[in-house]
Length: 183
Image 1 (tube, rainbow, N blue to C red):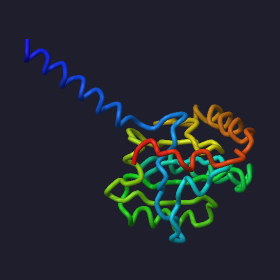
Image 2 (cartoon, rainbow, N blue to C red):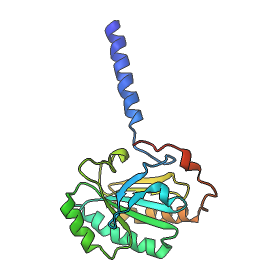
Image 3 (cartoon, helix red, strand yellow):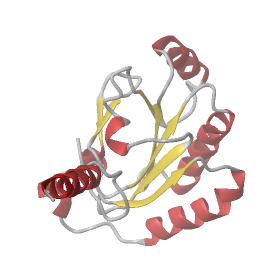
Image 4 (tube, rainbow, N blue to C red):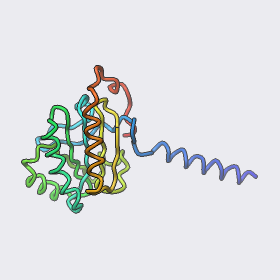
């Protein structure tokens, strides 16, 4: 009987631990830190409050990721950088690969950052496939998360971006005192 109770408690503890480490999702405040931009400044979600933010995790070996970033840059240009900010976080590459692609994409008007081997940026998001996209509304909360998607998801993504852009910017910074989903 004692063994059964201990086993049940162990299973319950593992289940609760899993819930505590769940991937941030719609309605959650995203992890704030997104790395350093090419010009060296620190990129934080909280600094972009009032904008719609698309965070796209990518890697050089992900063909769709390499197609997607120029499309997202064009979308940002079309919608206006005052309202939409795209951040491309290089994930799962060595630094030299990132620097090479960053130089090639020097004219992309998006923020590019690098997630080092410690996975400080990606780890809180629990990335399990690339491309991996997080859309953050003007209120600073996650609105949508997409994993391992392709061109067939483009219409859905565009509709979601348009819906987020149609929402008014919040009058106050409600999320300034909220804690991120995980760090």
